[in-house]
Each structure stands twice: as C-alpha cells, then as structure tokens.
Amino acid sequence: MDFALNDEQLAIRGTVRRFVAAELLPREAGFLRHGLPRDELRELQDKARAFGFWGLATPEEYGGMDLPAITRSIVHTELATTCVPFRFGGTADNILFHANAEQRAEYLVPTIEGERLGCFALTEPGAGSDASAIATTARRAGDDWLINGQKTFITNGNDADYAIVFAVTDRDTRGITAFLVDRTAGWTSTPIATMGSWHEPATLFLDEVRVPATAVLGEVDKGFELAMRWVGAGRHAIAAQCVGIATRCLRMAVDYAGLRRTFGRAIGSNQAIQWMIADSETELEAGRWLALRAAWDADRGADARHSTAMAKLYCTGMVGRVVDRALQIHGGMGYTKDLPLEWWYRAVRAMRIFEGTDEVQRLIISRDLLRGHTRIGGHVA
Ligand SMILES: Cc1cc2nc3c(=O)[nH]c(=O)nc-3n(C[C@H](O)[C@H](O)[C@H](O)COP(=O)(O)OP(=O)(O)OC[C@H]3O[C@@H](n4cnc5c(N)ncnc54)[C@H](O)[C@@H]3O)c2cc1C
Image (cartoon, rainbow, N blue to C red):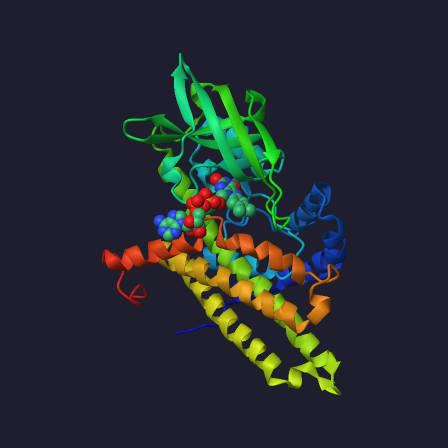
C-alpha cells in the first residue's frame, strides 16, 4: 500500500499552491470586506487558463484538462485553503454533457467558455431531500411544453441566464423530465438571504413558461436519473474542499497558539489548546483519506456512492469542528471579520445541507449495508 502522491499529482498540487499564494491569498482581506466581483473572478480564471488550468473535469475535446478524480480532489483541497471563492473556469454541469448536438452548441459550449451561466433547479419549497416529490409540472401544448412551479435554494439562481428545470411530466408514473429553460422564456427569481454569503441561492418562479420540444434534456420522463447523477458528482469536491479549509484553519490555529501569550507563556503550552490541535489534526487526516479514497473509487470505475457518502458526511462535520476550534484558539480575534475564520464558521454549515444532508448520507450508507450491497469495511476488495 502506497499513500504517496505520484509525480504528476505533486506537480499539479505545487502549481495550484503557488497560484493560491500569489493570486488568492493577497485578495483575502478585500474579499472579506466586499466579496469577489465577477469580473475579478473572470480575470483570475483567464490568468489560470494561460498556464493551462481550465476545465478540470471537462473532456479534452472541449479544451479541458479531463483530470482524474484524485487529481481534482487535490486541486479542490488546495484552492479551499483560501476563503477567496475562486474556481478554475471551463466547467459546466456534468449533465449538460448528456445534451444533444444542438443543445451542446447553445448551452454547453458557451457555459464552458464562461459566456453563459446556468443553474440546477431541482429543490422546491415542498421537496428537498425527497426530490422525487417535486410538484413542478410540465404539460404538452402542441409541440411545446408549459412549465408551472417554484424552485428554491438554487445556487446562482438570481444570476443565471438559463436553468436546468426538473418537472413532473407523467403524474401516473411520476415521470420527471429535465428542461433547459432560458430566463427569456419567462421565469423570474428572487435571492434568498442566508447565514453564509456563499452560493447565492435564489427562488425561481415558473408561471406558464413555454418552451419548445427541443428544450428537453435527455429523454422525457428520464430526468430524475440525470438529477441524481448531478448530485452525486458534486459530493467528491465538497469533501475535498472541507479538507482544504480545515488544513488552513488548523495551520492558523497552530501558528497563533505559538505566538499568543497569556500568563507569561504561549497559549499552545496549555493542554486545553494542545488537545484541540491534536483532535483537529487527527480528524483532518481521517477526512483527507476518506476524500481521496472516494476519488480513487471513481477513478477505478467502481461504484463510488458508498465511499463518497461517507466522505461527504465525515468531512463536512469535521470541517465544522476544526473551524470552531481554530476560532476558539484565536479568542476574540477569531470572531472578527479581519480573519477568515468567522466567514468559514458560517459558510461551512451549508455543506452539511446541500447535495444531500447528513441524514441522507447516513441513509445511503446504512441502506447499502442493510440491503447487503456493501460488506462492512469491505468495499476495498
Ligand atoms: C446554500 C444552498 C445551496 C443549494 N443549492 C441548490 C441548487 O443549486 N439546486 C438545488 O436543486 N438545490 C439546492 N439546494 C437545496 C438542498 O439540496 C436542500 O436544501 C437539501 O437537499 C435539503 O432539503 P430541504 O432543505 O428541503 O430539507 P428537508 O428535506 O425538508 O429536510 C429537513 C430535515 O429533515 C431531515 N430528513 C429528511 N428526510 C429524512 C429521512 N428520511 N430520515 C432522516 N432525516 C430526514 C433532513 O436531513 C433535514 O435535517 C441548496 C441548499 C443550500 C442551503
């Protein structure tokens, strides 16, 4: 068994690490005060593209890097060591790759190029964890479809110029279809104020929105499988991001524990502080291997659902505990907006909710065992 990264993985990690140090860390203070404007993000993405970092998961035929899941996991971890919410350009929702040739030209390619912004609209006021219970409908009107309903907590929903909307198209069989719906077709949105200023979710309103038959993504009544594919794919990245955030917070905590003095000595000389550091390091290491392990399953073509659910469940809880301890070690300073800790403290809380809550991950893991799909601890074989 070899836990070492290979030369290519080390080289990519080194490049991303240098990019974070040179381009992102100096922008942290500005981000904490007034966010990251979209044109600044675009500028950074162009800079990264110039040295080849563009479209991490995007196939080479679209100019992407098409990196293996483990390498992407390493990249996500490095980028998450700063609170500046940078992501490399050249990406699109994975389900857009299931689009037909015309739709790829109209939605996929411009999205990869950063000319269009989409959003993934599944959740509704009455259906979140139980996404199959959505009430939005699409009914035929000649060759067109008329869509009615409401979507909520949709990331980028207020800025997107098109939405991938899931609607019930067969009430009897509960058939669900995915539609590509331009904002110009008539849907409206309103932002939702949340605890962390991350992901900018919005509510979408669709009132007799008319779309042509060509708006169907994939097959009629087969949209739910597409939706589940989208949700599953993001969980890897979330686990890896948690590892990056926790790494930075622990680093800050260790540094501060050595510098800050009370009662004539560094606070790090107290067992209370040492135990917080030890617990964070241990949990972080466990999370790192769960995240890489899930990525490894994906790379070798194994069913990664089980290991990804464990990685997402554990890492999102782990990062919350590590951020909390780091904030505690910084005392009053940790609570200020001068440091990224309070921002992370609020932001990471959402990670236990979106892309499947803690409880949904536990359902997946326990069901796999109870139904005999997975042997206890035996999914390595
Ligand atoms: C910041 C943010 C961004 C988001 N982005 C998107 C997006 O881009 N697109 C999109 O479609 N959605 C998005 N969502 C929605 C997200 O996927 C849902 O919030 C999530 O799936 C939970 O659904 P819910 O909020 O309706 O909670 P509910 O499903 O109502 O659950 C409420 C509570 O009950 C628990 N629970 C539910 N069922 C069970 C069960 N069977 N057993 C035990 N416990 C259970 C849940 O775990 C939770 O604790 C986003 C949410 C947030 C917060």
